[in-house]
Length: 422
Image (tube, rainbow, N blue to C red):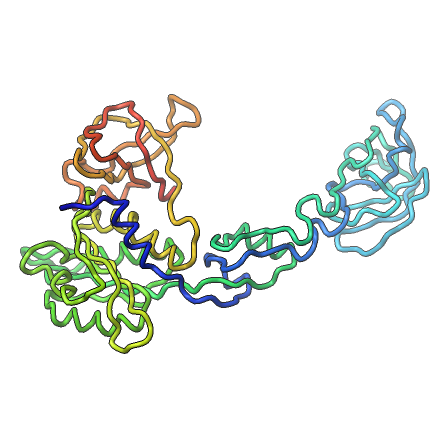
């Protein structure tokens, strides 16, 4: 009996526990998941400031200004970005001001330098007096204190990833460090006595090993560096002992290969005596056989590592990582939303479906030339032989998710897609 993708993922997420919390400076916390909401420590902007290079003025002085009848103002100094100066601006005068500089208290607008004429030929900036060529309203080209963010406003919530944009916002608002969840310690194991390192001379029956590079790369895209990568032979006892030792020293173990019902499927056999691990068949193509659960640690006390035993065919392993491992690792880090954004694309051509399973088909997603703003998807592999098609999978930038019972897809039909890379 097969279980659905949703049932399998739910079983996993119910058993995943968030990792410990610690405080890090912003520069070291990028990519981590925030453990608590973060508020602005001061307003943004901190003070009224100029949005343009120009002149700080009293708007009322320029009510009649035009290109044909410019208004002349006396120049009484200059304010640069970062300056604490607050020069007086009596009626009929102006102060040179640069972008980001604090607005003098007696000014209520800024005239861009392009709307002025200097007092020396060939020089845009005036020294003693400036001619203003246009009227400006009160507040023109002025950024008001707190108009972006008020002091105390929530800038980021618990469960959100600290992106570069969020980090910049927090730094600008006076935040130096944040509390975040730890990054998972992950070990990757590729199984199979037929596997050889890329570039090695191959005998009949031997193949280059690519899964460890694939999984380590997918982890890196999540911001997770693998603790180590192992390659193991088809000895269930040796693998069981290795897993027993790893159970207490890392947070997750990801294996590829050896999870089927065969008499030599090493991972499934090695896990048979693990009560917290289950072997299932999932209604998905590719990636039907899966083993997943929590390992017993060699020493009592701490919880054992979570193991994700994935199929050995490269596309099966990649699709399984996308559907089950990625959401679980995000949940370990305290992420609230563990799912990618799903979009709709138009199928560029017909393809064979998998009517009794969710079809996860590697596709190339691109802009739809026929409909501006829409997307089109094209299979990157032959839909009849997906699981082993590592060559075609390398060109894919997403997956088409074809619902159970839908069957074949026709050109022009809408398809749900997940975009994974540019």
